[in-house]
Every structure is written in C-alpha cells, then in structure tokens.
Length: 61
Image (cartoon, rainbow, N blue to C red; front, side, top):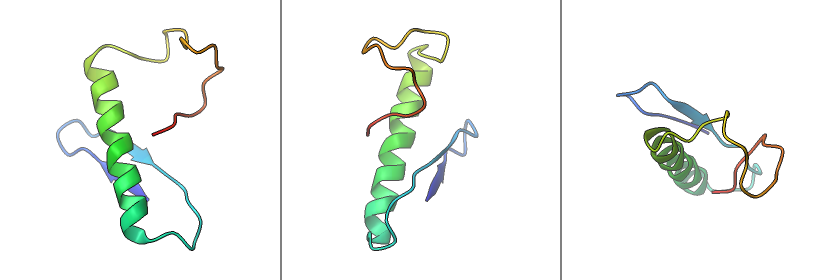
C-alpha cells in the first residue's frame, strides 16, 4: 500500500500479509505518512543519529 501527500509529494509504502484487510493497510500507510510529514516538518532526517541506537532502514508506526 502506498500513500502520497499531494502538497509535498512525499510518498511512503507499507507491506503486509495478503490476509490483511485493505482498510488496515490503508490505515497503517496513512499513519506512516503523517509520521514522516511531522518528522520532515521538525527537521528530523537521515543525517541525525538514531536516538535508539538503531542502524535505520525502517520505522515502527
């Protein structure tokens, strides 16, 4: 499932099991998009170290 913010062009994707309801994947994708927009607005980005010590590559929403 992919969600795109029309104002910024920011696009996020989520992957889930084929047995998951479409509405559930849509909800997760929209929440991830909101998270990324808030992160982008606050100036958070890949150049900042992960406060939890992770190596990046994904987020939990």
